[in-house]
Amino acid sequence: MNCFRNYIFLIGLFLVFQCNKSAGAEEVHYDTIQQQRKADTVQKDTVVKKEIKYHAFVVKNKNKDFKTLEKKYSQEELHAILAINRLDYKNKWRADTLVVPDVIEKDFTVYSPFPKNVSAARNIQKLAMFSYAIHAYALYENGNLINWGPTSMGKKATPTKMGLTFTNWKKEVAISTVNSDWKLRWNFNLYNYLGIGWHQYDLPGHHASHSCVRLLEEDAYFMYNWADEWILNKKGTVALAKGTPVIIFGTPEFKKKPWLQLLKSPHANDYTEDQINHEIQPFLPEILKQQNIKRQYLEHAQ
Image (cartoon, rainbow, N blue to C red; front, side):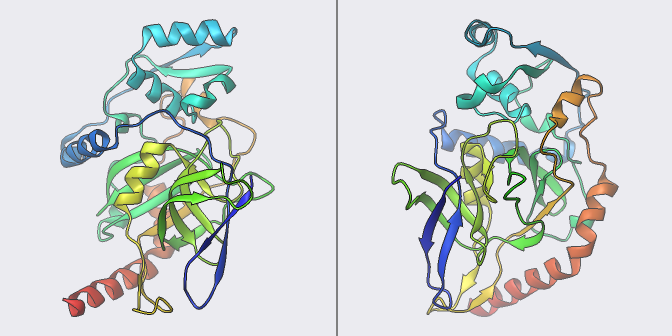
């Protein structure tokens, strides 16, 4: 993965982002996705998690077998299957075995390994969590799960920094200074001084980035509009309030594919509410402190 540079004026800093060269993703109808996810979110509290069963689809002849899949499943269904296997459409050829739900549901959150409700986050307006262990993210609003999806985080040589951080600034397309053809879409900065952010990029079914967090394009777009930027003073030299809290956690898994365990148990990758509460609790005072600072600033700014 190559680095790209992005300039902002914060204490006169020259920032360097470490990211991969961009690759095209399948076409996404963003407005439709946004509307559907908003509709799904309204109903979250009344949805009971369904019991999902999975079977293996062994890929022996990539061209022939994927043609079979494309005939059997719609584009949306195939997209969901690939996402469960932490792949985007461009990288489908990397699969040797795909984990496939027996029934493909329209609401992707039914496959979520994250708990639907988290009590430790009930007073947090927005919270993004990234699990290194299962290559996935979750978004919570006041403790309610609104979305989840696959990720590819920092590889072993260049791991993503773990712990608590906050979203900073964002840019629709970041251009690599190494190669102008490399475009990183829907970028949202997470560590200003380290130049780490989330953005659209290849999902190859393993952790492969250079510290950044890769997402499917529609997820990167959704999160680009969902998360909040920091608030700076008029000169852009002082941060007055932080953005959305982000927790990166879990033991990194660089060799195995945890989702293959779903073939043995549909709950193999699941986190319990207690486990997620445990990840949040050490950071809760700081998150609520920063949330209150932002609330007070916005109240006085009116």
